[in-house]
Image 1 (cartoon, rainbow, N blue to C red):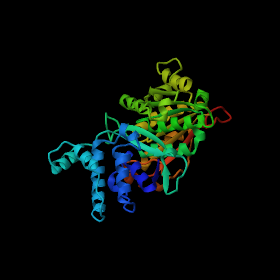
Image 2 (spheres, rainbow, N blue to C red; image 1 turned 135 degrees about the vertical axis):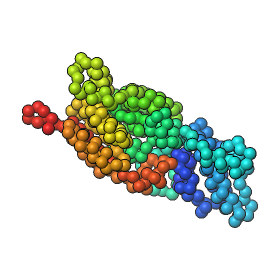
Image 3 (cartoon, helix red, strand yellow; image 1 turned 180 degrees about the horizontal axis):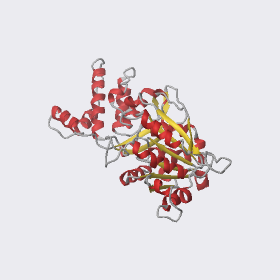
Image 4 (tube, helix red, strand yellow; image 1 turned 180 degrees about the vertical axis):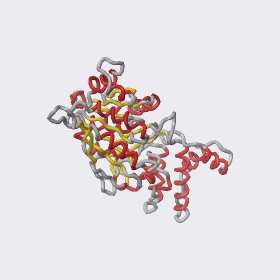
Length: 387
Protein backbone atom coordinates (compact mmCIF):
# COMPACT_ATOMS: atom_id res chain seq x y z
CA UNK A 1 0.00 0.00 0.00
CA UNK A 2 1.41 3.38 -1.06
CA UNK A 3 0.48 6.45 1.00
CA UNK A 4 1.36 10.13 0.78
CA UNK A 5 3.73 10.93 3.62
CA UNK A 6 1.19 13.23 5.29
CA UNK A 7 -1.40 10.41 5.45
CA UNK A 8 1.21 7.93 6.66
CA UNK A 9 2.01 10.33 9.50
CA UNK A 10 -1.67 10.26 10.51
CA UNK A 11 -1.72 6.45 10.34
CA UNK A 12 1.43 6.29 12.43
CA UNK A 13 0.14 8.80 14.96
CA UNK A 14 -3.27 7.11 15.25
CA UNK A 15 -1.67 3.69 15.71
CA UNK A 16 0.65 4.92 18.48
CA UNK A 17 -1.96 7.13 20.22
CA UNK A 18 -0.34 10.48 19.53
CA UNK A 19 -2.72 13.22 20.76
CA UNK A 20 -4.63 14.54 17.73
CA UNK A 21 -3.64 18.12 18.56
CA UNK A 22 -0.07 17.10 17.67
CA UNK A 23 -1.09 15.67 14.28
CA UNK A 24 -1.17 17.70 11.09
CA UNK A 25 -4.40 17.46 9.11
CA UNK A 26 -3.38 17.47 5.41
CA UNK A 27 -5.81 20.03 4.02
CA UNK A 28 -3.62 20.40 0.94
CA UNK A 29 -4.89 16.99 -0.26
CA UNK A 30 -8.27 16.51 -1.95
CA UNK A 31 -11.17 16.06 0.50
CA UNK A 32 -12.15 12.72 -1.04
CA UNK A 33 -8.63 11.32 -0.69
CA UNK A 34 -8.48 12.19 3.00
CA UNK A 35 -12.02 10.93 3.67
CA UNK A 36 -11.45 7.64 1.85
CA UNK A 37 -8.17 7.09 3.68
CA UNK A 38 -9.81 7.65 7.06
CA UNK A 39 -12.61 5.22 6.24
CA UNK A 40 -10.66 2.46 4.50
CA UNK A 41 -7.39 2.53 6.45
CA UNK A 42 -8.52 3.54 9.95
CA UNK A 43 -12.26 3.05 10.39
CA UNK A 44 -12.83 -0.17 8.44
CA UNK A 45 -9.14 -1.17 8.51
CA UNK A 46 -9.50 -2.74 5.05
CA UNK A 47 -6.18 -1.34 3.88
CA UNK A 48 -4.57 -1.88 7.29
CA UNK A 49 -6.29 -5.00 8.70
CA UNK A 50 -3.87 -5.00 11.60
CA UNK A 51 -5.84 -2.11 13.14
CA UNK A 52 -9.02 -4.16 13.17
CA UNK A 53 -7.42 -6.76 15.43
CA UNK A 54 -5.48 -4.29 17.60
CA UNK A 55 -7.25 -0.91 17.52
CA UNK A 56 -6.49 2.03 19.82
CA UNK A 57 -8.63 2.37 22.94
CA UNK A 58 -12.13 3.81 22.66
CA UNK A 59 -10.98 6.84 24.65
CA UNK A 60 -8.28 7.64 22.13
CA UNK A 61 -10.55 6.94 19.19
CA UNK A 62 -13.11 9.38 20.58
CA UNK A 63 -10.58 12.23 20.65
CA UNK A 64 -9.15 11.26 17.25
CA UNK A 65 -12.47 11.07 15.41
CA UNK A 66 -13.67 14.29 17.05
CA UNK A 67 -10.56 15.96 15.61
CA UNK A 68 -11.00 14.30 12.21
CA UNK A 69 -14.68 15.26 11.94
CA UNK A 70 -13.95 18.87 12.88
CA UNK A 71 -11.33 19.16 10.13
CA UNK A 72 -13.44 17.34 7.55
CA UNK A 73 -16.40 19.60 8.27
CA UNK A 74 -14.21 22.68 7.85
CA UNK A 75 -13.04 21.40 4.46
CA UNK A 76 -16.54 20.38 3.35
CA UNK A 77 -17.87 23.85 4.13
CA UNK A 78 -15.59 25.36 1.50
CA UNK A 79 -16.11 22.77 -1.24
CA UNK A 80 -19.07 21.76 -3.41
CA UNK A 81 -20.47 18.25 -3.82
CA UNK A 82 -18.48 16.64 -0.99
CA UNK A 83 -19.76 15.11 2.22
CA UNK A 84 -18.48 13.16 5.18
CA UNK A 85 -19.09 9.44 5.08
CA UNK A 86 -21.98 8.59 7.43
CA UNK A 87 -19.97 5.69 8.82
CA UNK A 88 -17.57 8.13 10.44
CA UNK A 89 -20.40 9.82 12.34
CA UNK A 90 -21.94 6.46 13.27
CA UNK A 91 -18.67 5.12 14.62
CA UNK A 92 -18.01 8.30 16.58
CA UNK A 93 -21.39 8.16 18.31
CA UNK A 94 -20.99 4.50 19.32
CA UNK A 95 -17.67 5.00 21.08
CA UNK A 96 -19.32 6.03 24.36
CA UNK A 97 -22.81 5.39 25.61
CA UNK A 98 -23.84 8.81 26.94
CA UNK A 99 -27.17 10.60 26.42
CA UNK A 100 -25.68 13.93 25.37
CA UNK A 101 -22.49 15.34 23.90
CA UNK A 102 -21.92 17.40 27.04
CA UNK A 103 -22.18 14.36 29.30
CA UNK A 104 -20.02 12.46 26.85
CA UNK A 105 -17.21 14.98 27.20
CA UNK A 106 -17.53 15.08 31.00
CA UNK A 107 -17.49 11.28 31.11
CA UNK A 108 -14.39 11.12 28.94
CA UNK A 109 -12.45 13.66 30.96
CA UNK A 110 -13.33 12.09 34.30
CA UNK A 111 -11.99 8.66 33.41
CA UNK A 112 -8.32 7.74 33.81
CA UNK A 113 -6.67 6.70 30.53
CA UNK A 114 -7.45 3.07 29.76
CA UNK A 115 -4.84 0.58 28.63
CA UNK A 116 -4.62 0.21 24.89
CA UNK A 117 -2.91 -1.58 22.07
CA UNK A 118 -0.37 0.67 20.40
CA UNK A 119 1.43 -0.02 17.13
CA UNK A 120 4.77 1.38 16.06
CA UNK A 121 5.81 1.62 12.41
CA UNK A 122 9.57 1.53 12.08
CA UNK A 123 12.32 0.93 9.57
CA UNK A 124 16.09 0.99 9.67
CA UNK A 125 16.23 2.76 6.30
CA UNK A 126 15.59 6.51 5.94
CA UNK A 127 12.53 7.29 3.80
CA UNK A 128 12.70 10.92 2.62
CA UNK A 129 10.36 10.32 -0.34
CA UNK A 130 6.92 12.00 -0.44
CA UNK A 131 5.18 8.61 -0.65
CA UNK A 132 5.51 5.71 1.78
CA UNK A 133 5.27 2.02 0.87
CA UNK A 134 3.86 0.26 3.95
CA UNK A 135 5.42 -3.04 2.86
CA UNK A 136 8.85 -1.55 3.61
CA UNK A 137 7.99 -0.81 7.24
CA UNK A 138 8.01 -3.13 10.24
CA UNK A 139 5.27 -3.00 12.86
CA UNK A 140 5.37 -3.68 16.57
CA UNK A 141 2.19 -3.94 18.63
CA UNK A 142 2.02 -3.75 22.42
CA UNK A 143 -0.67 -3.66 25.06
CA UNK A 144 0.32 -0.74 27.28
CA UNK A 145 -0.94 1.25 30.22
CA UNK A 146 -1.61 4.92 29.55
CA UNK A 147 -1.03 5.84 33.20
CA UNK A 148 2.31 6.33 34.91
CA UNK A 149 1.77 3.61 37.53
CA UNK A 150 -0.27 0.42 37.21
CA UNK A 151 -0.10 -2.73 39.35
CA UNK A 152 2.35 -0.88 41.58
CA UNK A 153 4.94 -0.45 38.83
CA UNK A 154 5.94 2.01 36.11
CA UNK A 155 6.79 -0.92 33.82
CA UNK A 156 3.39 -1.14 32.09
CA UNK A 157 4.24 1.51 29.51
CA UNK A 158 7.21 2.19 27.26
CA UNK A 159 9.44 5.10 28.22
CA UNK A 160 11.66 7.33 26.09
CA UNK A 161 14.95 5.63 26.98
CA UNK A 162 13.69 2.28 25.66
CA UNK A 163 12.76 3.84 22.32
CA UNK A 164 16.15 5.55 22.03
CA UNK A 165 18.06 2.37 22.90
CA UNK A 166 15.92 0.37 20.46
CA UNK A 167 16.82 2.80 17.68
CA UNK A 168 20.50 2.55 18.58
CA UNK A 169 20.37 -1.25 18.38
CA UNK A 170 18.55 -1.19 15.03
CA UNK A 171 21.24 1.11 13.67
CA UNK A 172 24.08 -0.90 15.28
CA UNK A 173 23.03 -4.53 14.72
CA UNK A 174 26.45 -5.91 15.66
CA UNK A 175 25.29 -5.75 19.28
CA UNK A 176 22.31 -7.96 18.43
CA UNK A 177 23.16 -10.30 15.57
CA UNK A 178 23.47 -13.87 16.84
CA UNK A 179 24.11 -12.67 20.39
CA UNK A 180 22.92 -13.98 23.73
CA UNK A 181 20.99 -10.98 25.06
CA UNK A 182 19.82 -10.24 28.61
CA UNK A 183 17.41 -7.40 29.34
CA UNK A 184 17.07 -6.02 32.85
CA UNK A 185 13.71 -4.45 33.67
CA UNK A 186 11.98 -5.66 30.51
CA UNK A 187 8.66 -3.98 31.37
CA UNK A 188 6.23 -3.99 28.44
CA UNK A 189 8.66 -5.95 26.28
CA UNK A 190 9.10 -3.14 23.74
CA UNK A 191 12.88 -3.29 23.67
CA UNK A 192 12.91 -7.09 23.71
CA UNK A 193 10.43 -7.25 20.84
CA UNK A 194 12.59 -4.94 18.72
CA UNK A 195 15.70 -6.99 19.49
CA UNK A 196 13.88 -10.23 18.63
CA UNK A 197 12.72 -8.74 15.33
CA UNK A 198 16.21 -7.56 14.41
CA UNK A 199 17.75 -10.92 15.31
CA UNK A 200 15.24 -12.75 13.11
CA UNK A 201 15.67 -10.32 10.25
CA UNK A 202 19.47 -10.57 10.28
CA UNK A 203 19.44 -14.36 10.59
CA UNK A 204 17.05 -14.89 7.68
CA UNK A 205 18.46 -12.39 5.19
CA UNK A 206 19.26 -14.34 2.05
CA UNK A 207 18.08 -17.62 3.58
CA UNK A 208 14.96 -19.70 3.45
CA UNK A 209 12.95 -19.63 6.67
CA UNK A 210 13.54 -23.30 7.39
CA UNK A 211 17.26 -22.96 6.73
CA UNK A 212 18.05 -20.75 9.68
CA UNK A 213 19.74 -22.16 12.76
CA UNK A 214 18.88 -21.17 16.30
CA UNK A 215 22.44 -20.22 17.12
CA UNK A 216 22.48 -17.91 14.11
CA UNK A 217 19.45 -16.05 15.41
CA UNK A 218 20.59 -15.49 18.98
CA UNK A 219 18.97 -15.87 22.38
CA UNK A 220 16.94 -13.38 24.38
CA UNK A 221 16.38 -13.43 28.14
CA UNK A 222 13.82 -10.94 29.43
CA UNK A 223 13.71 -10.25 33.17
CA UNK A 224 11.75 -8.10 35.60
CA UNK A 225 11.09 -8.11 39.33
CA UNK A 226 7.36 -7.46 38.88
CA UNK A 227 5.29 -10.53 37.99
CA UNK A 228 2.55 -8.50 36.29
CA UNK A 229 5.12 -6.71 34.15
CA UNK A 230 6.74 -10.00 33.16
CA UNK A 231 3.35 -11.44 32.17
CA UNK A 232 2.61 -8.33 30.09
CA UNK A 233 6.04 -8.62 28.50
CA UNK A 234 5.39 -12.24 27.53
CA UNK A 235 1.93 -11.41 26.19
CA UNK A 236 3.29 -8.63 24.00
CA UNK A 237 6.13 -10.63 22.51
CA UNK A 238 3.74 -13.47 21.72
CA UNK A 239 1.16 -11.31 19.89
CA UNK A 240 0.90 -13.16 16.61
CA UNK A 241 1.47 -10.10 14.40
CA UNK A 242 4.83 -9.41 16.05
CA UNK A 243 7.89 -11.16 14.54
CA UNK A 244 9.02 -11.89 18.11
CA UNK A 245 6.21 -14.47 18.35
CA UNK A 246 8.20 -16.74 16.01
CA UNK A 247 11.57 -16.27 17.72
CA UNK A 248 12.63 -19.75 18.93
CA UNK A 249 14.82 -18.60 21.81
CA UNK A 250 13.00 -16.08 24.00
CA UNK A 251 12.99 -16.77 27.74
CA UNK A 252 11.27 -14.96 30.62
CA UNK A 253 12.64 -14.93 34.16
CA UNK A 254 11.87 -13.04 37.38
CA UNK A 255 14.96 -11.22 38.59
CA UNK A 256 15.36 -9.23 41.80
CA UNK A 257 18.51 -7.11 41.63
CA UNK A 258 18.76 -7.04 45.43
CA UNK A 259 19.78 -10.70 45.32
CA UNK A 260 23.04 -9.56 43.74
CA UNK A 261 24.14 -7.78 46.92
CA UNK A 262 24.22 -11.07 48.81
CA UNK A 263 25.49 -13.08 45.84
CA UNK A 264 28.57 -10.88 45.48
CA UNK A 265 29.68 -11.66 49.04
CA UNK A 266 28.51 -15.30 49.24
CA UNK A 267 30.27 -18.52 48.39
CA UNK A 268 29.22 -20.59 45.40
CA UNK A 269 27.46 -23.05 47.72
CA UNK A 270 25.33 -20.48 49.53
CA UNK A 271 21.59 -20.05 49.18
CA UNK A 272 22.25 -17.02 46.96
CA UNK A 273 24.10 -19.09 44.35
CA UNK A 274 21.00 -19.42 42.09
CA UNK A 275 21.35 -15.80 40.93
CA UNK A 276 24.97 -16.26 39.94
CA UNK A 277 24.13 -19.64 38.41
CA UNK A 278 21.33 -18.12 36.34
CA UNK A 279 23.43 -15.25 35.04
CA UNK A 280 26.71 -17.09 34.55
CA UNK A 281 25.64 -20.60 33.58
CA UNK A 282 22.14 -20.38 32.15
CA UNK A 283 21.99 -16.96 30.50
CA UNK A 284 25.68 -16.38 29.71
CA UNK A 285 24.86 -13.06 28.09
CA UNK A 286 27.07 -11.51 25.45
CA UNK A 287 25.16 -8.23 25.73
CA UNK A 288 23.11 -6.90 28.65
CA UNK A 289 20.59 -4.16 27.87
CA UNK A 290 18.39 -1.99 30.03
CA UNK A 291 16.48 1.28 29.74
CA UNK A 292 15.39 3.80 32.37
CA UNK A 293 16.69 1.64 35.21
CA UNK A 294 18.08 4.46 37.36
CA UNK A 295 15.02 6.26 38.73
CA UNK A 296 15.43 5.47 42.45
CA UNK A 297 18.81 6.05 44.15
CA UNK A 298 18.13 3.23 46.61
CA UNK A 299 18.19 0.71 43.73
CA UNK A 300 21.61 1.72 42.44
CA UNK A 301 23.76 -0.67 44.57
CA UNK A 302 21.58 -3.64 43.60
CA UNK A 303 21.56 -2.70 39.91
CA UNK A 304 25.32 -2.23 39.81
CA UNK A 305 25.79 -5.52 41.66
CA UNK A 306 23.65 -7.33 39.08
CA UNK A 307 25.64 -5.76 36.25
CA UNK A 308 28.93 -6.75 37.88
CA UNK A 309 27.86 -10.40 38.06
CA UNK A 310 26.46 -10.44 34.52
CA UNK A 311 29.68 -8.88 33.21
CA UNK A 312 32.04 -11.28 34.98
CA UNK A 313 32.47 -13.01 31.64
CA UNK A 314 35.21 -10.78 30.31
CA UNK A 315 33.81 -10.54 26.79
CA UNK A 316 30.33 -9.43 27.87
CA UNK A 317 29.22 -5.81 27.63
CA UNK A 318 26.19 -3.83 28.71
CA UNK A 319 24.26 -1.04 27.01
CA UNK A 320 22.25 1.01 29.49
CA UNK A 321 20.04 3.91 28.35
CA UNK A 322 19.10 6.46 30.99
CA UNK A 323 16.80 9.46 30.81
CA UNK A 324 18.44 12.37 32.60
CA UNK A 325 15.77 13.46 35.07
CA UNK A 326 18.01 14.10 38.06
CA UNK A 327 21.72 14.81 37.61
CA UNK A 328 22.53 13.73 41.17
CA UNK A 329 20.91 10.31 40.69
CA UNK A 330 22.72 9.80 37.39
CA UNK A 331 26.02 10.79 38.99
CA UNK A 332 25.42 8.36 41.87
CA UNK A 333 24.93 5.52 39.39
CA UNK A 334 28.08 6.39 37.43
CA UNK A 335 30.17 6.69 40.60
CA UNK A 336 28.97 3.29 41.83
CA UNK A 337 29.45 1.59 38.47
CA UNK A 338 32.93 3.03 37.85
CA UNK A 339 34.28 1.40 41.02
CA UNK A 340 34.23 -2.02 39.35
CA UNK A 341 33.36 -1.42 35.69
CA UNK A 342 34.62 0.57 32.75
CA UNK A 343 31.86 3.01 31.78
CA UNK A 344 31.80 4.96 28.51
CA UNK A 345 29.25 7.51 27.37
CA UNK A 346 28.52 6.69 23.72
CA UNK A 347 27.40 10.29 23.10
CA UNK A 348 24.30 9.14 21.22
CA UNK A 349 21.81 11.82 20.30
CA UNK A 350 18.71 11.47 18.16
CA UNK A 351 16.95 14.80 17.53
CA UNK A 352 13.14 14.49 17.75
CA UNK A 353 12.85 14.76 13.96
CA UNK A 354 15.16 11.75 13.51
CA UNK A 355 13.65 9.42 16.09
CA UNK A 356 12.54 6.06 14.76
CA UNK A 357 9.77 5.36 17.28
CA UNK A 358 6.97 7.74 18.26
CA UNK A 359 4.81 7.87 21.36
CA UNK A 360 1.83 9.68 22.81
CA UNK A 361 4.15 11.63 25.11
CA UNK A 362 6.53 12.72 22.34
CA UNK A 363 5.90 16.42 22.97
CA UNK A 364 7.09 16.03 26.57
CA UNK A 365 9.93 13.68 25.63
CA UNK A 366 11.36 16.14 23.11
CA UNK A 367 12.81 18.19 25.96
CA UNK A 368 14.43 15.20 27.70
CA UNK A 369 17.99 13.99 27.29
CA UNK A 370 18.82 10.29 27.07
CA UNK A 371 22.33 8.92 27.49
CA UNK A 372 23.52 5.47 26.43
CA UNK A 373 26.42 4.00 28.37
CA UNK A 374 28.61 1.05 27.40
CA UNK A 375 29.82 -0.92 30.43
CA UNK A 376 32.46 -3.64 30.57
CA UNK A 377 34.32 -5.53 33.27
CA UNK A 378 37.37 -3.60 34.41
CA UNK A 379 40.49 -5.45 33.18
CA UNK A 380 42.67 -7.07 35.84
CA UNK A 381 45.98 -5.40 36.70
CA UNK A 382 49.31 -7.20 36.89
CA UNK A 383 48.44 -8.55 40.33
CA UNK A 384 45.27 -10.17 38.98
CA UNK A 385 42.89 -7.70 40.56
CA UNK A 386 40.52 -5.31 38.83
CA UNK A 387 41.89 -1.82 38.70
